[in-house]
Image (cartoon, rainbow, N blue to C red):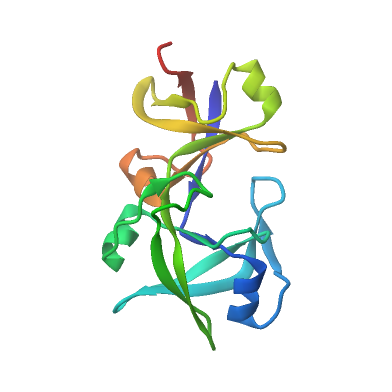
Length: 187
C-alpha cells in the first residue's frame, strides 16, 4: 500500500475550558482545515514554557478535546529540558506537565505533553481492505528500503496518511506529501 506523508509540527489540543481560560471566549476560529476530516488549525497560538525555556507560537488545533495535549518533537523537548513519553494521542498517563501562555493568561497543565508516536491514519473500509487493525505495528519503506515502523490508527472518517514529526521528517528525508510504502510486519 502506498500512502502520502503528513508532517506534524508542534501543536496543542485544548479543552473548551482551558481555551476559554487562556483566551476569554469559548469558540475557535478556523485558520485552515487539515487533511484529517473535522480537524483544523485555529487562528490562536500559545507559548509553552518549562522553567526558563519557551517554545513560541504553538498552534492550537481544533476541535476541542476532552483533554489538553501538547505534541512536540524530541528536539523541542530537549530544548525545553523535559523528557515526555512517546505515546499515542490521548494516552496521557505519565505525560509531562507544562505551562501555557496567551497574551494575558498563564495556565499550568499537570500532564499532557507527549511526543506523538508515528502512526498511519486509515478508515475502517481501507483497514479491512488491507487487513490492518487498530494499534497494529506496520513497516514503512522509502525507495524500497525499510526506514521505520508506525502504528495503525483506524477511524471514520479518516484521510489515509502517515503522520511523523519534524525530527522524523529530517531523519528519514521525507517531505509533506511524499509517498511511502506500508507493509504488514512479517510480509
